[in-house]
Length: 268
Image 1 (cartoon, rainbow, N blue to C red):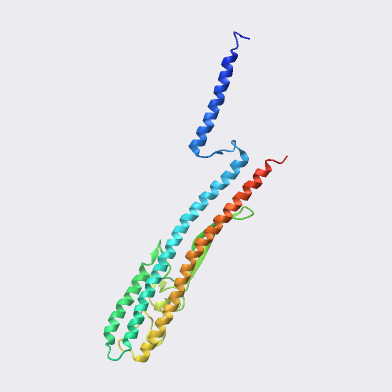
Image 2: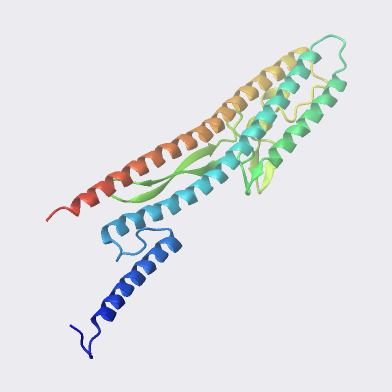
């Protein structure tokens, strides 16, 4: 039936056009945002899940950046410790050479002095982002190891601690005092009897017995430095493993949470 006042065909076409335009707007919104569920009105249950996941992804991204900085600190300290071990090994070789009869100990000491200066240079340059883990006073350093959302939905950031010990059997080459390297503390700076410290000893006038004592002190220093290097290596590996573990747990938690939420949609 045709009416002068109402054009049914035009109204039907207009209704169709409105539906098409609405669908087009929704599609454009999905394309521009990259999200199928971009706002609560799209699907309240899925939006809640998606929002939490996006928030956690941002946190995990920040943790990833922090892990990069932490790894750089640990790697810098480890490289410095490894280099120092090589230099102390060279000092050990010079001491062995000095035990032979007829060797000019003054000449050997000149070479040892150069190596001792290298040790100081290594310790001073092992700083990253204002932190030095091989030259420092007693205290605690830490790096971010993971981001955790537990079963009660509480979130936290987990840290890995590294406790500095500036004794002769500790894990730093030298201590620090007032922002400057303290040459009388640490593995290399602490005096060990009459022969002095690894850093300050002078074998020019040493007797054979004193050289033997110096060798014992150097061996003790190498043992402590090797232990410190192992600690740093363990922290680097542990942080990586903890991150992988937490990412796996986080993925499982999100998957379980999503399933439970979907199930509630079917409950009357």
